[in-house]
Length: 150
Image 1: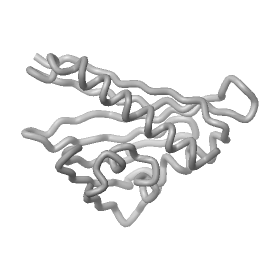
Image 2 (image 1 turned 120 degrees about the vertical axis):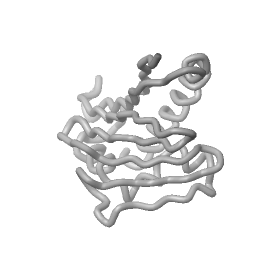
Image 3 (image 1 turned 45 degrees about the vertical axis):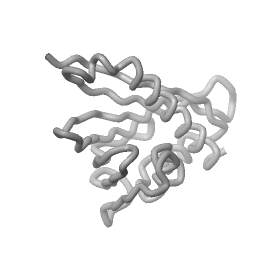
Image 4 (image 1 turned 135 degrees about the horizontal axis):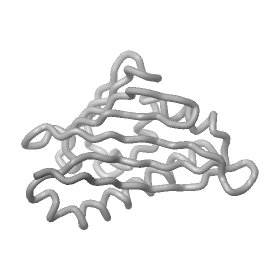
C-alpha cells in the first residue's frame, strides 16, 4: 500500500521574484545551484535543446544520487512545477514545485521547494531518515540559489 510524502524547505532571499523565477525555469543553469551535483561531482547529465520553460528537461545519472529525469510541466510567475521520474529498481514519480512569494522585508522573496509523491513498502520505513536527508539537500540548494540571485 502506498503512502504520500512531502518534503518542504523554505528560504527568504534578497532578490526579486523575477530573478528567482528566471533562474528556476532555466534548466541550463540547474547545475549551478542543484545540491545533488555538489554531492557527486562525477554526476553525468544531459539536457533538452530547449533549456528554458515548459517542456525543458534534465536527465542525470550518478552512483551516489541515483538516476532520474525532471521536466518543467507548468510555470507561472509564482510557481514552477516539474515532474520527476526516479529510475531505481522501478520507476517512481514525484512532483516538485518551486513557489515564490513576497518576503517579510522589502526587497525579499520567500522561495519554497516542495516535493510530493508516494512511497511503498520499505520506503515508508526509511522515510524519517530520507526526509531529513532530502530536507538538508533542499536547504543547501536554496542557499546556493540565493547566492546566485542576491
